[in-house]
Length: 118
Image (tube, helix red, strand yellow):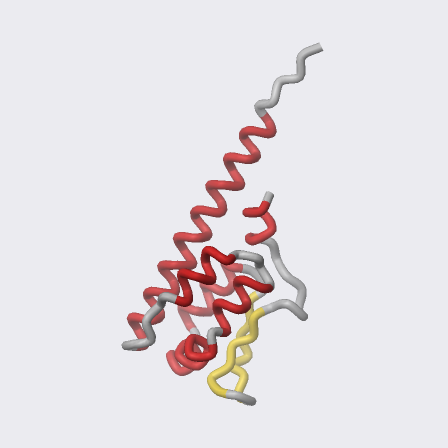
C-alpha cells in the first residue's frame, strides 16, 4: 500500500514546479514520479543544478510523496557535470519506479490469491 501512495498523482498544490533560478520558472511541472522523470529528461541543465543545490528534489520526494528511500538516493547524486547529473537522477528515479511497481504488483497478487474457506 505504501508503494501505491508513492506512485500516486498529486494535486496542483503538491506538484513539483521546475525553475532555472529564483523567480524564473521553466513552465514545467510534475504531479507524479513518472512526470517528474520525463521533465528531468528534458529540462535545462541549469534547472537541474538549481534544484539539486537547494535539495528541492529530495524534499519534494520525501515530503510530498513520502519516499525517503528515493530522497536519500537523490541526495547522493553528485553535482558535477550536468549531463552526468541528469543521467544519475533519471537512473535513481527509474529504478525506484520499477521497485515500487514490482512491490505494488506483489501486493495485488497476494491480495487476489487469498482463499476464503467456509
